[in-house]
Length: 264
Picture 1 (tube, rainbow, N blue to C red):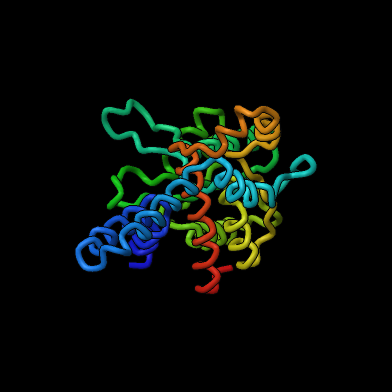
Picture 2: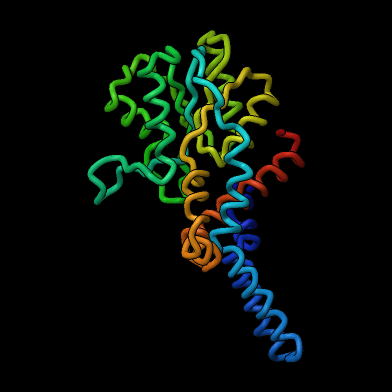
């Protein structure tokens, strides 16, 4: 039930869902309290405009992504851990496993293994059956890793985890079962790294962040802000910014909920 509620309830907090909710409230006020209707519609419009502006997305995303940027070359470790969330199952008409927006996770993890950063590649991620089904994500990631030259004998899989906390618990069990000692390189999206890192550390693991899938590139932002066209576009609503703002809010909400549950 926690998993379902964690997917459902935030939808009414994200900009699009909250704006739609307020529009339904506006319909009610139009019938009962018409003088409040304009204020409710105005709130919905402001939320949607701010949530879909590039400036807000850059602020919310940039704060999270900038926290764990490696300042030096990543050291060698006992294992590379890749968290799921970046692949789509090979369901028809897809000819093979699809790499999604966060697919950089498995690509970067396999690259680090190819660079001999660690002897083991641990892939963590199940598949929620009421969200389309398919093979466990760890299995799909393994196919991609093997296609990139990683030996199947170097891959360990967690096929059951459905959230970040379960990722950490199951990875810890895999490390113990295989007597893997020492630090691990944690590969996930830069936006997801702060929450993931706190959970793994809370469980006592020696973790080195290896973020990838950066949404905000400071040099690109700085270059855009040098022109009036870039400044203007940064405050005009667009769907990409709405999506990125929603992703960031998901992480902020996750940090709060996980802290309340004692997982951080």
